[in-house]
Length: 461
Image (cartoon, rainbow, N blue to C red):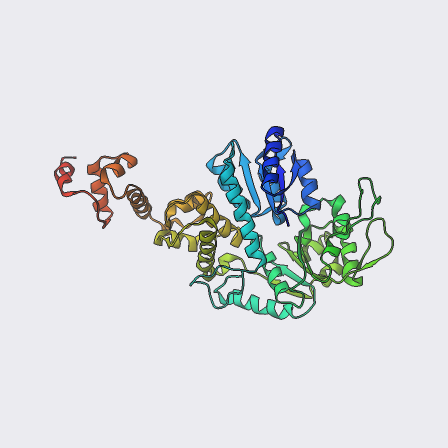
């Protein structure tokens, strides 16, 4: 089966030439010349790879990626003629797989497209990357060491054995979709479809047709029948993420599905029976939403047959380093790199960082480091680049100025193969001053030239 690619590019000449090249490489190509067209195609079709121009005439490529992250994350290569390090980091942290400059290096482009295919195949086969720091409580893609998270997993296993609706609560980025997948994979429906839907990304006027489908001619533009998400997930599991974002007048239709196990498609007055398990998630306090008349009380009580609450990462710090090493193992394999070390200063900082974006922020930060890293260790400098504003959020008392300076000097020394002259030039200091700094920092390293000869020079400074 051919790999299906959506090429989103406003420049006609590039779009056509690249499209022909992709077809020669046996890819099935669909095209979109602007943001609006891309939205229509992404909403009703599934693609294996997205080639996305950063700047579109009616929008920004990063905004498109964020809006449809459930479909595009780790399948998207950003293309741009205006490359900058901040935009590259933003693209990777938003879920892009790779970031490439124009004019395109075709060989590099196809290498990255093949890597996306390989990653997709690995996911389909349920392969996971393991490492020695992953706890015995870990299960498949859920990595944990903390007793608090181990208890959550134990509860999830019990709920997996039933067909009850489960409401998954937790802050943005804690892994609510991952927990939903865990429940599905451990249920009797594990061999059937798992279909995630981000309710906040569906426009209100399209919500009913998107979920329940429509018949040809049901409304202007309905040129064909569309089955809808619930029928697509029949016999399997549907995951309604951000369920608190569903407009209140549409919540009654969802309640009817839960109660009657049937749907009504637009243009069809006959109910269609379905067999779908519903898992839902939100980062909102739904009871407060009920009291504010923004969420139906009857739907709230129907959803909370079973509840799982995932604690934020800052409340389970034991999980931070196992998660980091898990992602390092993942991206070492994916990007053919060999990061094997985290400096003590960086590790201490990682443990104390607040991780307001939870596991998602941690994962994307590690991934952005890999996109720029050529050495085998993660340092404080890497974290300052990867974590925007990290110096304001981290606990500075744990990373002193001397420790920061020591790490930077060591990194430059490694870069120059411990050549004092070259290191001094990069740091824009004299060799004598560098020598004195090495002594003050108690930096015990072997260098390729005698420092004793500089003693007199130091004395003269």
